[in-house]
Image (spheres, each protein chain N blue to C red):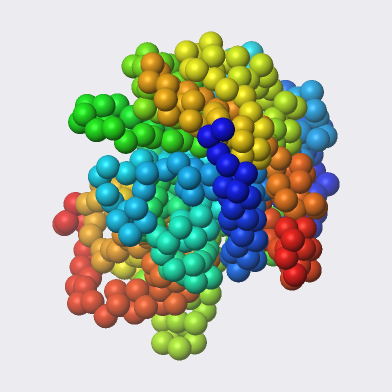
Length: 337
Length: 276
Ligand SMILES: Cc1ncc(C[n+]2csc(CCOP(=O)(O)OP(=O)(O)O)c2C)c(N)n1
């Protein structure tokens, strides 16, 4: 990683949210990268890009509440040779500014980094206008765009640093700030496009992204204790480009895969994984869990996750259900392809 | 005079009660967009208690005037107004923001009686209001559409696209308000993204524009009655207000755009509002 050797050692992820760590990391990157500029649309405080703005007022632009202009201006700054970091809520980055992101930034393949906060149902009490349960589906379809959903604050630090290595647009979706910590430290080998096996397992594979990774890891521990199940957990932090290898290995090794995401089941993580499985010609028992094509209920994020079965309880129940299915494993893949 | 001193006194008392209830709901909810709910409260009060043609017992009455809270984050204040008008039992606001409640920060028209359109994402209310106004005209109906914008919200290009369309189609049945409290989230509007000369912008876009004190009931009544009688095109009432109006520690402090209230802060707010 070209951003290695930086003096950040321990981010106290128990005390700092994903957004706060993002703001801190970006400010430090700003010291070494005079080409970085920041933009927000009256959400400098809320997204924490304002930490960068306070430190580099001449390199920060608050455009007011105007997300289309926000992404258009970022494209112009990128065309002028700067590296814009753009932050607003993910509902507005992916939907309000959708075509500006797609046509101005992705189509022109500009070196622009979008850090979209309040992803999924993390802004639960704000209601559907502020829930972002379609963004992965939308931005995944933009050619040239790298799409990352960090599991926690520590992975956010890694992703924000690593996106500087990508010469093109990157969309990083983070939460509102109450995501539990998954990682102890930053050095677990984060690499864009390479998913992380969180725990080994041979009976079934659970693939999560974002906040679901924490719940999957907890569920795997309990399923081992309670049911003696060996659950492999994969943190698929990069939705695009997707790590096909780790998915196909899971198909071969465990023959059962379930995906969990804080997103509509249409078009997100589960769909991306299903695409890989379907194209391989190798079958396996498969389920994708997320919001069942509805606008979420209002409420605390943890309650919403429980309601839609994407928390620890939901993951345990779904794993048991899929384990109970009569899935006939075929030992010889070759004659099926 | 379009409004009597006695009416003004009564409306002020209703607004005071609405503000106190908004403080309570903010406390129960664990936090709300309190600053902007308080700044627009006098306008909402005079509209709902004097001018809107509505029937709370029949929220879907086809002939009713429509009210669009384009600055949908003011939902906590709108929810209190609707409850106190009798659309539903105020007690259900104890569940505001709670899991499974019909009431979140931004009101959902499919769940909350009296909410004509769902808002919360800035810059959608005016386009929908222009559509409502044209819809009434298409159907030959004489109800009016009232819409409340935030001043920061007016940064959104879609507001001005709709403004152009309203003037172009001469929607004489559309009455707009901007809650000109001079604040948005990241600070004062004029330091984040300057709006001035603001009233002139509306004039240049073809709106008959009035600039008033949004806490003065005589000025509000005069402007609203003018707008009701003006049928040549849309009218914009730029109402100068104070964010957090009525609560000493909130007034004009952008930090109170959104906030939670401790028991002590609730007590202080209520005493500022003349209670307790
Ligand atoms: C499209 C969109 N972008 C951003 C937001 C987040 N947001 C909520 S309120 C607000 C500031 C609103 O300021 P203003 O319109 O002046 O309202 P007021 O000061 O009256 O509360 C912002 C940026 C949003 N709701 N919608």
